[in-house]
Length: 193
Image 1 (cartoon, rainbow, N blue to C red):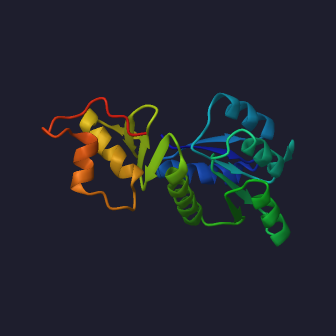
Image 2: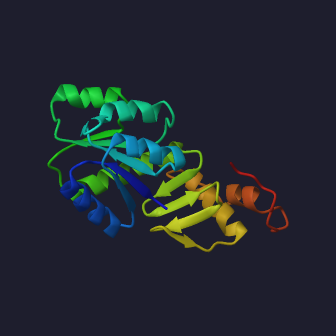
Image 3: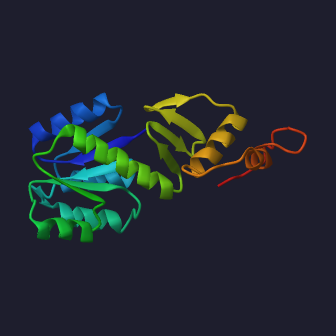
């Protein structure tokens, strides 16, 4: 399930983003303070986090540094009115993966989130993404638009090999060697990750 934490104190902007992303199969939780966001992050790591710079109890760049000290691969996007080149560079230097200046188009934000998740999926150890598909290695499950797809173990293993080699050619021979034995039987003790 792709969930978004959005750290934003402006209720109108937060609700607009939440409504739009919810329509596109994201679960969005809004936090109006950095303190609340930190507390939530201690108990659950979302798929991605959106952070406003100016918050009532601190600065988004400090939250970003705190996140980076704990979760190096958690995708972070700044959504802020601070559009000066110095601020943008500073945001990236403090761990942001992307930087969107307000006002912004919701469609553009959605596209940037999907692009960032695609890139994160290539380096993530437990989650692989391809468009609206998510493969969770820890749960050994595949989701499309947050809904689990029922797969047999051989189907899951086949899908895993393909997702791990996204953008590469995987030959029939390679698949057979990794998923099935020479007699065409499924190798159920194969561990591919």
